[in-house]
Amino acid sequence: MGLFTSTPLPEPVGDHAPPVDEHPARIQQVIASLRQASDARITHPRRFRAQQLRGLEKMLQEREVDFLSALEQDLGKSVTEAKFTEIDVVKSEIDYAQRHLSEWMDSSTVKVPLLLQPAMAKVEPRPLGVVLIIGPWNYPLQLVLAPLVAAIAAGNAALIKPSEVAPATSGTLAKFLPLYLDPRVYAVCEGGSDTASDLLSARWDHIFFTGGEKVARIVAAAAAQHLTPTTLELGGKCPTVVDNHLLPTAKRIAYAKFMNAGQTCVAPDYVLSIGDSDALVDRLGKAITSFYGKEPLAHPDLGRIVSDRHFQRLRRLLSMGTVAHGGTFDEATLRIAPTILRNVDLDSELMREEIFGPILPVIELSSFEEALDFIAARPTPLAAYLMSENPRLQSIFSDRVRAGAIVHNAPMAQTIIPALPFGGVGASGMGSYHGRHGFERLSQMRPELSKTTVIDTFSTIYPPYSWAKRKIIDRLL
Ligand code: NAD
Image (cartoon, rainbow, N blue to C red; front, side, top):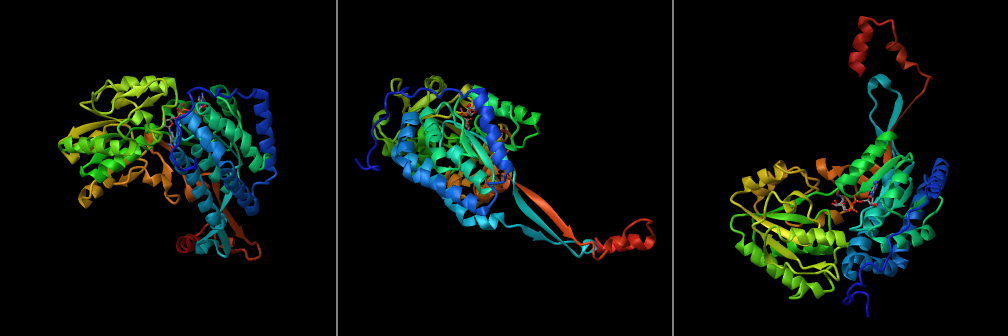
């Protein structure tokens, strides 16, 4: 069977044991050796960075089948979806970094005020040192490797702690990454919260965390002990406001929502339909059937829920509204059919917590203004989507909605443009990455000033001060 033809259904759930937590002593040993190599600045030269990026690319090429198989075991991801969202997206980040590395590493000179001339002033990106990358389970490969691309490009050493909830992917990374990257400066530590806690007790130069708000607080508190800068890539409920109820709209929403069985941080969490939603609900149903057929639970392109705990949580959410489409599930394979809910209880868990599964509530509102108020009254999401061809609504939406990203008519497409910063604001996180933004996030943008003592121009401003000196300073600054 070809790699891109139909994918078999996943293996029975739970065949891959969670990784064993690393021994604290070994963790300390790994960190110490990364620190030592980083202090020797072996990651700094451009050539080294380019070499490591090539190594990462090679790993994704040569071990593609191993990673695809791991992703299928962990999340029942279809080959096409896994390749696109976990491998190709990272490859395109690598490719973009390779093409722009020299330009990003270049220092940029800045203008020097007359008072300080002659002098040379520049901003030079410098590596931070050793970066800790902690990843989530939903895109368990992409969300540790894309930050790693930024860490490598910026000339840092890095340690990756993949999610223990996606054990096959974690194990595959731990097995192969040291074979393709320089093990003196890049390492993988497997395990759950114990490993994470041991890692967090050490001093890092940056902590790059992707996950939920609860653990983010633990990470931020641990980072505060060493005053370590952090990037927190969190989630939230991404609203999708629908003004244009046509079939292409429904298809785009359904595609973004039900990819990876809805377990995507930037997936549309709920729909706010402006005006009557009957036609939209009908078209969403049609879109779902056209993607996953009449028996979605048996369709190979529908991913599964990552764990029994999340499956039970989502089952509970199904009862918090009226099922307009889908609503079926299979406990044995941890699958839930793409579901549209109407008449949802706005005070229920369904509308308070991030859904993170294939359940899409559709809420009918009478005006666009009401939708803006609805969004503003809730925590800031990672992205906000507007489905409308109306330029006036688009402009008001961009102006009034606070979110990590604003997207018109293409939910989730923002994530695959390396030149766009990816990250949250407020409740959805802090700091962004991808492309140059990742490079700068993991660099110190260091100012450097050089002046000669051969000509002593400063004598004009030294004490004792006078009216004339004051005038010179005023003029030349
Ligand atoms: P999580 O917060 O439960 O876990 C994330 C990571 O933290 C895992 O590696 C886990 O082992 C580790 N961890 C667990 N306990 C810890 C502790 N005490 N100290 C330090 N680390 C600890 O998140 P999750 O369930 O894996 O992922 C789902 C969440 O991630 C959702 O909220 C989703 O929105 C968010 N997410 C955000 C993005 C983004 O890019 N902004 C992307 C994907 C997922």
